[in-house]
Picture 1: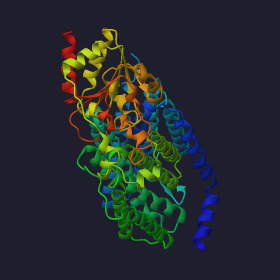
Picture 2: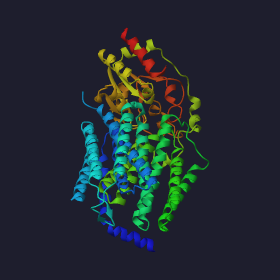
Picture 3: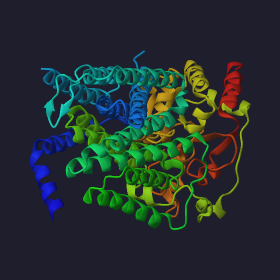
Picture 4: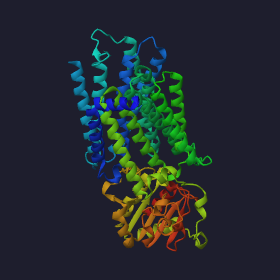
Length: 104
Length: 471
């Protein structure tokens, strides 16, 4: 029972966030609707770059790490590195694809 | 002050993501949209580093200084990641695009899982935070290992789908156990890194099991699905830190990615459940009914084909992945220009799933300067085939297979196809008689109007162009 109470109180505390999530879901659906097939691959790639925002979390954890905790430093370094790969690689490759659609 | 400024940075980031994605839905604004998203990302990242304030129990500790070592490690990781990511993305061939997207996606998933692993210990006893952490570890790991397998499959390293006995039941059981294990950790407030690493390992194994049985034509759908998984994992991270930019970015990609996955499934006329649980691309389907009534195959030489094309009024080219593999997109454009010069109307018929991802073929042809207007989508080109003199199928197979319309036992039955068999002449360029990406036989080759033009697409088309020039 206690866990359910926990979850309920969690929901209460984060009410706005749940609204935020629901609205974001609709924005995501709305934004993609009606996209021509031609653009599906660049769009998937662009979306792929955007979820690289997870790097913000990695940097945040890293800034909070106790410098004596070597394992955490290594994991954090890896997380920031992987996140950067996702962001930079994602945006650059999308740009390369879209470069080809420019009007002649 | 700093906190508010950071929130503004995150707001700008969120708006640029939405705007960027929206602009990417239109060919004219797409490139700018991508750059706007990238700019927002840079603002969010820089803001996080520069405006950081340590919080103890929600209260800002003004005196806390982040050690130089940590700044150094962050800068080093970003620098290294930028160099590697930039070089890889710039160097990769356009044909290898799907693999690369899959790989970058896996990196994001792994990043989310690592964050979860590191934050777990700090949040024991907070049920909500623990749920977010456990889910971000599970989903991030699935996305990571699944993407790596998808990469290996597209790469050709892993060929045939691997199906363990009763893999559907096995996979479902493993999935339920992974989530149940996660629930158990949260419920009992377990504080053991070993247990969390065990969960991490189990989720990695599930990601592998999830992806290995899926083969052939379904890989793009899987990548798109894993893409939305990573979005979800990022969103759980945002939930954990009450970080709005991670939430918007993650959920946006989660929902948009799921919709994109469903759109792709619709283009292939297969429900998503079929992609994940259904057997496809196996060997058993080659001998369906009607295979005995095949008839014979004709082939055509380069000289005859040149004459045929030269005296046609209208030619439609159907490009497929074989064209991309052979790097023949430039020579096909040369052929197109040559024929246009002689007064032949040339168009390209683009099936929604031509290539390995929806729109992949458009990217490849655009790379070789084929005009955007020449690429005609399936629904618009299908009524035109009756007035077409020659259809030239280059390296495409499943998207022109009439079995999708006529043979209910075929695994691609129901998939909309390019109705090339309505054209007066059908020329099919193929390296050999082997089956297509989906691993099934094609009755089109036995059509009385069809002729095979054997050879590697690049070489065969180069010969054809040379032959046409002499005429």
